[in-house]
Image (cartoon, rainbow, N blue to C red):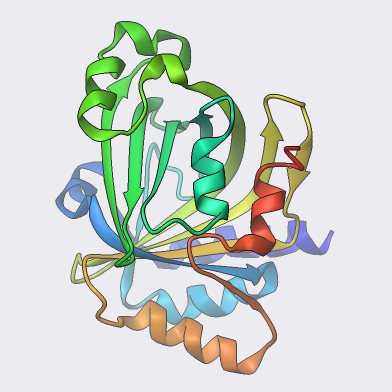
Length: 243
């Protein structure tokens, strides 16, 4: 009941933000960027939204501001990408098929993160996961990934709702994910994060804008976990006890 009340309050607070459209968002794709992620209790969300309302716009798609995302992560049979991430390799890769449910857009995406903390994302439009081999996925992966399509199988899916806030200078995005759940597609294990929210700050450089300052202030006021690109405490939840 508390979680439902918090989410309802959050939805109402979004009405105080000026909207930004998908077309306007194309100006700030941030395909090469730094990402900083925080795992926070859901009840901290209202504080952040109140402080951000004057400096951020909220993405709106088809009249919705809290948008459903569905993602399928691909990996090799021996989970090479997952293990590279878990073992802290300097350069890490993720390959996924992500659907933005409100806009009915689906993309095949490759994300590479280097040892300098920068993330490079490349993507192409596709229709469905099953159609990848017919829609240029092989050529796309040969250009941007370490693995070919025949080496990959669907390993994990997740679903969440995302609020995307855009800094007025168009140099930073703050994404807020709630109602987060995961399903391992190999062993059918399920995991969820009730009462938690993942906040991710995506920016073109390491300048600390208002989101960083706000979250750092909040960190001094409460006990929380800090995760940089999802640390080892979170990995087992993500892969839903994959062993």
